[in-house]
Length: 83
Image (cartoon, rainbow, N blue to C red; front, side, top):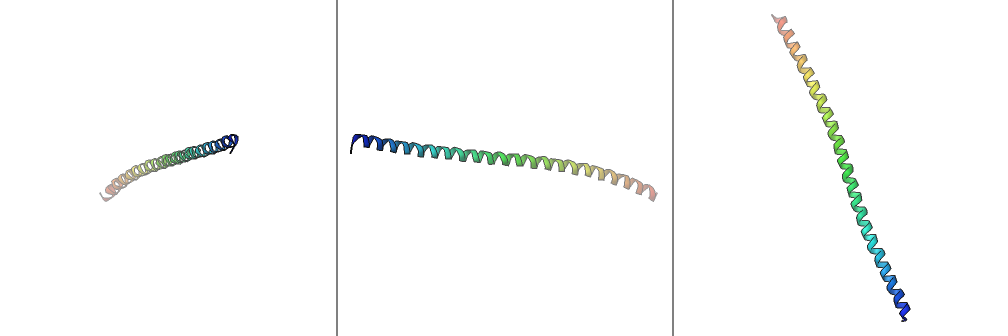
């Protein structure tokens, strides 16, 4: 083989190896970004879910207080009627 052919073959092998290594690194970084995005999305969904649960809890506590007040008034009125 001629020296020029060997040099060209070496350059092709080096270039191919570089492309493969860069592709592997790029794919790994893309995979990490995808996982980070998924985790971020899950965190956002959990935050929204927590906000909704807090709203429902506040609503149920308010409803409970209202019902408690109504029951107290009803019991007082019922007691007065029995007397």
